Length: 451
Image (cartoon, rainbow, N blue to C red; front, side, top):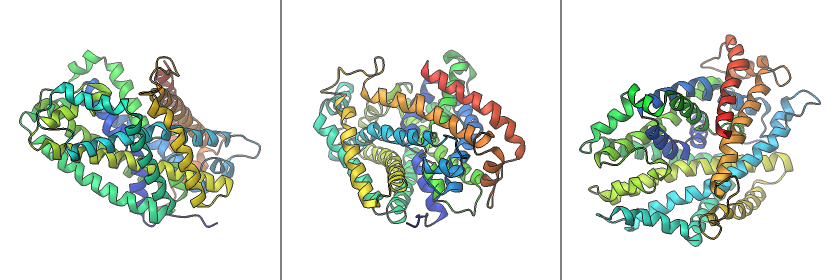
């Protein structure tokens, strides 16, 4: 069976960035920035994105492009005879399934809130308790949550069933273009709100005193964490797009473009949220409830808030759904490569499996609300803990060691693949940094996450 390829370079960059751009950018980034004092956190985040994110991204893409395969077979094609690196490929696939078992539910929340703003569930002048009650009522209803989750899953696999170019690439181009237009419109509107200047200063003007109050060490490790997780590295989600790439452009250059687009969306999400929060006297460090409780409170008290709320959650829907369909494509490719299934068969079977496997997350907020799996964590938090704190950092460390040690693929082979094509090239003197400092940084993230 001939392997599909992207129809254009723009398609590759938008789909890869779409995989990276998701809840981590538009939900997690603003509230983590708010909790860590704003601008100083943002500066450290940008620094670690270049020092850690870009190198590991080139490694996943290099394994994919050099092998022309998805997880498992990608390792098998490049590893030395008798070695067992490919076992990690099965953990990558498991990680993608586990990620989708809760990500589809949260993506469904975004669609639900878009629908609620559009149809007038959120009205002008609602009090804080009523706004918070909407989120509580949604979580308490397994039918409502399950319905939006199922719609997300079925739409995602339907798109992927049409193929790489006709399905994923075509839809992602439209979604990402709409996302970028929406985010600029929303950011301009927020910046022009009365009193928005205070929010911009919090977000863009570094204040060491504010960072010291949180703790400089905490700010640095939080920034390192966010820069690392924003790209969804370590579970083969990016490797698959490397396997569809042409060899015309270097991987460092393409990785920088993906990171730039990913970062632009994260930074612009902050430009929407912080001026709006300060304009309406809302604390920017509200944590995970920022999107579903705090911001709707801002919108219902804003002139034309119903429209702005609907546009904001449409943007959030595009951001989360672009990740969903990108990871679905990875799951289909793994089944096609490893089991020889047709794309249609892979789409049907995966759709049924994900629908069933996502139910515990939906029920974990209502019928199974007493169920705690890891410590005091509910179903969603337990699944997220396994992916974010274990599979992503450990997986990234394995990709790194595979690419830079003589027991794996080897640094020279990795560097040759990365620098093939036109564009930005990685210098050979980075070898020691990749072999010693970068693994230590990833270990810090892993240990911090487990503690």
